[in-house]
Image 1 (cartoon, rainbow, N blue to C red):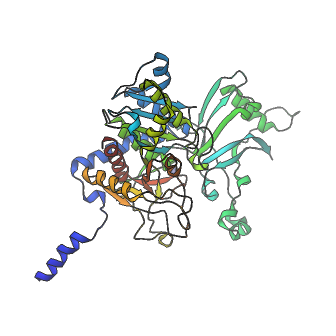
Image 2 (image 1 turned 135 degrees about the vertical axis):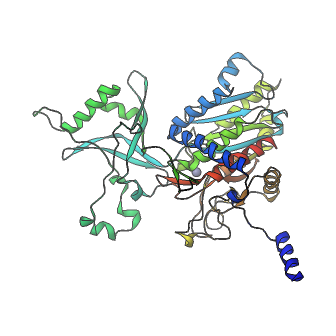
Image 3 (image 1 turned 135 degrees about the horizontal axis):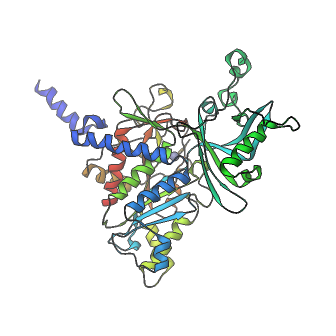
Length: 475
Ligand SMILES: [Zn+2]
């Protein structure tokens, strides 16, 4: 008997098992989990596009004492430790700073997430009529499985810039009284040919046309009466003409609010959790940061889902530019060397989502290295596919530092990978920040049904992400 209990002790001291968050928290933390997730769901519902998310972040940041960089520059204010500053990039990406006690040159602690999510964008000349039905042409954005977007209630979110240059915000389909929109699918009785196609071809990109109306304008002398009637409704309500679509950005997203999942209400189903779960938790974490040693940075970028290209993406020089402005304000003599040092000495958590182990699809995951729902924030050393290609492979020294921060602060975490070795993989913004010489590791929340119209997260993981990012900022 003595031998076996020795063995048990040895096993406990030498082997490692990831913890299920729910089994390792007290009542106080359990309550906090449910509280923070109410805030989280509201954040998801208020920010279904990158523009709406930026607006919401500015609203929350301003309420919490953040001042815009433009105002600081205009008034010639010198940033001092503890000062809270935000910089808005074209209403699509944004960065928040809490100025640290150390000089910027010593580096920053950055958590970087993205605000864009897969969706259906309207084409620039979208409205047409076919056999007395009015429809909208779309071009999908990001990695979607097209078959998931048919027969699903959709809402339209967007902005239109009219001829006078006025910006008109449009949201239709979120209010309970609002109409919603649908993409149709073939009835099974006529679906024989469709069902024999490959899943990726059963629904085509050009087939993702959104049904928007069917009542003809009452005038027998004209054609395309249904289209005209829709244009009239849009014109009456928003002052929009057909040409205005060319200067608009409309996104069709799943209509409705995020919901609790499970009889135990342990999970959240909602649209756009990749990556607004990391955006929300890093925002929530930086709001709790008062006077950090190193400048704390919450970076929220756009266009990650299409490869981080364009002037609101991580590849744009916006972040670098904003740090230059801060150095210019804090230092007596601006120099590019100080900027380079500030960037190279920084530490980053690239905050993005990763697929959680799904018991319905065990064949694509390595059970020993997959992240699990409810086992805490996930560290991902590398995300690339087939021979780690194209990814940021984080340094052991840096992962060790993060491990220590998490363990010291009772953050429940797990190590995970993005699927089996030759199964897939993916990219995040990690490698772009790593180009500056920063230490970067992917660190976020695992999801079920990632990139589907509704994704599922664990409330425990949302809480641990918040706790982990906060510990990182305060380290
Ligand atoms: Zn993502």
